[in-house]
Amino acid sequence: MREVELLLKQNHSKGNRQQGDLVLGTGQNSLRPLNLKMSDRESITAAVSKVGCNTQNLDPEQEDPEKNLCKIPSLQELEEVLHSAPRSCRHGDEVWPNLYLGDMFMSHDKLGLWQLSITHVLNASHGKLCCKGSDDFYGTTVKYYGVPANDLPTFDLSPFFYPAAEFIHQALTSGGKVFVHCAVGVSRSAALVLAYLMIHHHLTLLSSVRCVQQKRWIFPNRGFLRQLIALDQKLQEKGLNEPK
Image (cartoon, rainbow, N blue to C red; front, top):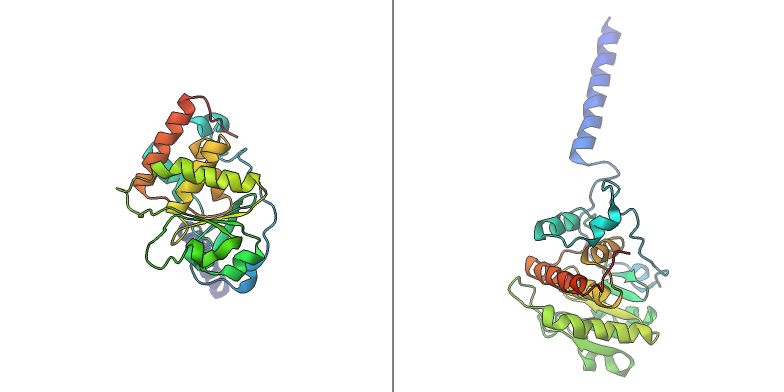
């Protein structure tokens, strides 16, 4: 009888631990913390394999994924999509073929950028604290474009959507590789990358977000999200964007 009681207690305790894993998300599927520590040399400088974005079956709970991706999201819906992604990113990630999104640490690593064959740098925090980017810093081997944006909801980033998208587009169509960054690589620079995908690849905002999320965690501030929603509405009214 004592052995039976002990066995029941062990099973009960084991069951509680399993249930705790499920509720607390401590298992394999739990969200990873944002890691902003300096990566080792291999993770920064090793060439990343060609990437693509598969936006099919992105939301299996939706009966019609294409219709869902085509809709213009509200701010709340967009933030829910952004919250749904694993919260982890490196100093630089290839989010589109030959297009890298990252932070200021990688932007300062000139050797690492050279080993990745980066030819163009877009700095979305130009002139801000701790960001060294300039034509003088990179020299003649890298083309530089600076956007003096503040990561504040009140800052109007939309005037830079088209110029930044054109800079990226010209670089990629000429066979170059582009590194887009700000301080952390999740807000200002991410918003400009999303605008590029919407303008030059005719993706909807939701499709663009889903695409980048497959490679990197991003979360533009609310002001930038509202400006991207306005861009999405403008492009869809013109019939330029379709879900892909």
